[in-house]
Amino acid sequence: MPSTSYAPYEHWDRRFRQLCQSGDDLDWGDQWTGAFIEPLRQADVRTILDLGCGTGNDVLRLARAGFAVTGLDYSQQAIAQARSKAGSKATFVVADMAQALPFPAATFDAVTSNVAVHMFSDTITRTVFVQVRRILRPGGLFLFHVNALADRALRARRIPPLREIEANYILEQTGQTVRFFSNEYLLDLLAEWRDVNLEAIAIPDRETGQPFKQVWRGVAQR
Image (cartoon, rainbow, N blue to C red):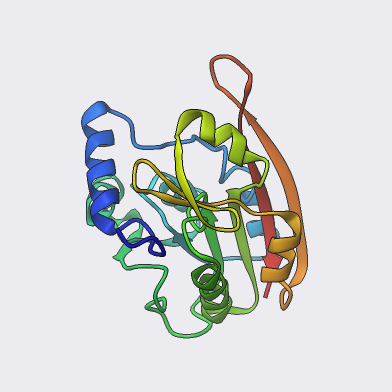
């Protein structure tokens, strides 16, 4: 894999296939969506795009909460599993979020993305944020979780880094690329947005209670 690229879809197809075979599919319960239901309802949101939806667990939670949800991922394996789970309850699209998102401008009331938009170089990350803003209606919401800078050391204990491609953008030995966000970097990415709210969230290990992950929870209005 070239040093400046992100992990190809084959990496994620293989990963989701292995997870399915082991009976695990990266489901965090309502860890991510639970905090977003009330803001979505307060904003009178009806249509949502879940960006980097994986096998569709968060899509299903949002659909059960009464929203019309589209899930997007570029792993065909993940989307196949998501469609199998959801049936007619949601719509799914195979596409690469690092490219132009395959939707007209102002398509959605909200975009959610949970630990999925932190896989890219600075250039691509900025493109993703611009694309999200494009497909949101005026006043629409972007609600997300991304790796915090404080998560870098925690993650390195579990998944050894291979090298740093650019500042806080790491290639891991698994072939996955991961970015870690500072508060200042996120504010820069969201400079053209309104009512930006960022909250640092510490997630404990489910078994030991020890620090496991650090993320930013963000809500921004177009």
